[in-house]
Length: 361
Image 1 (cartoon, rainbow, N blue to C red):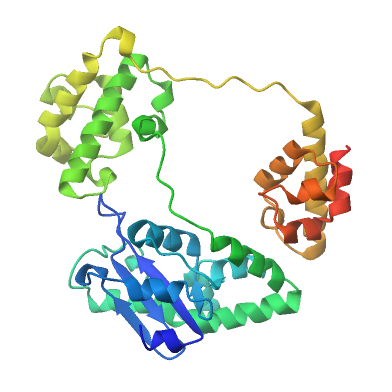
Image 2 (image 1 turned 60 degrees about the vertical axis):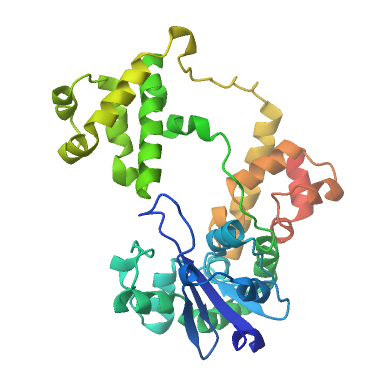
């Protein structure tokens, strides 16, 4: 960290293990200057404060690829925040790259083929294999050079200021605790089509899986998949033989967890009728024809400008941003500037006068 702190820029990446572990955390940190790459094992260190100091140093540019997730988990696990960012994924998107994954960019610009077998490696294991070490190192080793190539592309197209605005926004990223975790089972595909009794069973099965996954420190889907949970909730089996006969429920899961699954089904079946869960359907908003006209006018404007500047419409301005603008129905540039979803560069490219004209559609 002492050596890297003297460098004008440092590339950063992290590896977690949410595909394998219940408790997701940072299991590996990769750092690269233009001449050196280092892997840091956070499991072996009690204090990562020097890394936190580096991240918030305004004179050191931190280069990441798809920074959002890395910044969130570093903030969650250590309270770190970062400044002076350069995100090569954002830069590639704004530069008009057809494929913006790191593997695709490394292959295009440096002829390097990434070992895709290691994309979902278990980074919590120790020791790391030589292949894992090399794969992790490659994630940051080429980022400084990739950054330079993409910056040149952005300068040539006059889009560097667009990227810099996006980078400043990334500096404000913080970890947000998930809300409404009690109703997480309702997000399982097909859950909202179940009867209220089956929903109660599914809720108990979901809680059983969470508890089991937590005790094993295993990703929940590795205990039992969502489709199997849904099938069990529909059938509500009372015996192991009936549980074994349900299509999609692995025999190995019945052998290992059969008693726990049947207990969960029993608890769901005993929930009093008055306490059964129900799906709350949000009231359908009143149809607003003026909003529809504004949104259509904005989409027409966005699509035309996208063709003119050679960008995908969704990259120039996503539909969600257009919807926020249409809802705001701004009457002047000051009101337009207060719309959080609308970037300054997007407003400039679309044209503030043209946006305001769309508000009068």
